[in-house]
Amino acid sequence: MIDPKPANPASASGTDTGINAGPKAGGRKRRFGGTEAQIRSALKFYKVLAYLTGGMLLLLCAELVARYGFGQSLFAGGTNAVTGEPFGFGFADAEPKGVEGGVNLSVTVLIVHGWMYVVYLMSNFRLWALMRWPFLKLILLALGGVVPFLSFIVEKKFHAEVEAELAANPQAPQRY
Image (cartoon, rainbow, N blue to C red; front, side):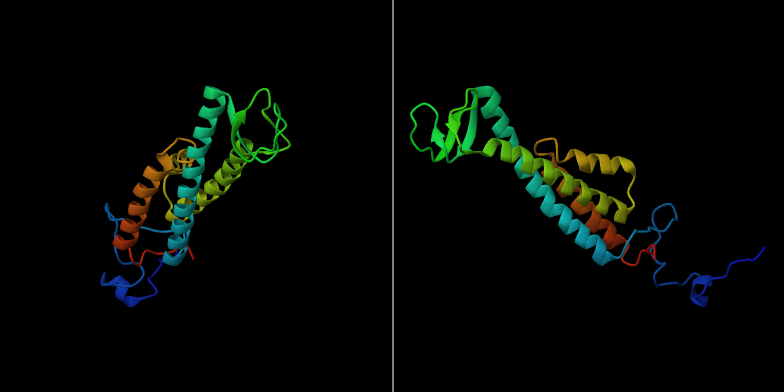
């Protein structure tokens, strides 16, 4: 059998200060799935989407309280169904419809949050894959978009964790 030898003679003596330096706890080296620039880009994309998705989730919760708690929906434009006067912007009866011909912003909030959550999941997967975290962290990241206020808490925690791992492993070997 062929015995593999290091390409750099310095690494054979254990004085390697290059790309393989910086052992992780337990003697293993930390490996990322991409470069530091790629990880920072994924982290920024995740941060923006965490705040946007969290904000839309809070709007969605307010809309659901208005609809199911008070029977109101948010409308823009249209005509008041009872009086026939023009309707500008505000809450009106959801059932029976209080506004005709207007844009139901309550439904718009539902749709926008749904699609934003899909993009948020893509940002979660990108960060998770580049950091090579366990699967449980991906589940926790994904829950941030469906549990109110959790996206803000999770974003802060994982942002600090990524920064700490990048600082502790400045030359972690990359996949390619």
